Length: 219
Image (cartoon, rainbow, N blue to C red; front, side):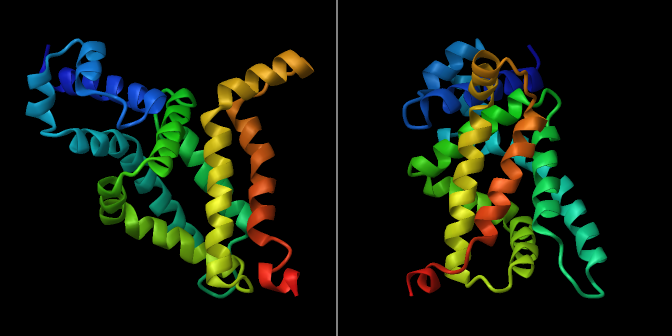
């Protein structure tokens, strides 16, 4: 087995187990058993469990962020003379890239969104710090365009809306297979990942635009 093949086997096993069981609950021995390698191989190629978790995210996020950064530059070019990028267009670009950044999407994308859910629900400070260091610029670029699209939403209110919308996205896209099964069983309709995102996008856009800041509604 070549070194590159060993690395890929470890990453394939790790991403599935992390997505299914969580980071803390998945042992390195479980990963090596699934990958068919010994523990020394993990230590040699990654050095630590934390580095392995980061490598799992890197394999997905690097092509996604490279493609997203290029698209955001195009969108910025369209608005340099003034105006803003419509929210639906901004989220459509991001969702298409998220589903198409990996060769065997959409299942790989579904696994990644499950991993993202684990990252939110489990204490992984090292991962958040690593994500900010490596991918912070492109996500800040995305958020800058988002803020320009909703200039009347105060920063703190926008934080909550983005947070809740991200939760809806992660929950929905990490459960695509279940939604497809329910749609077929209960409504006799076969739906694709693209169809699910088409249903999801107006909901997310509506959540970001909202009905006005919470304090104004309360008043």
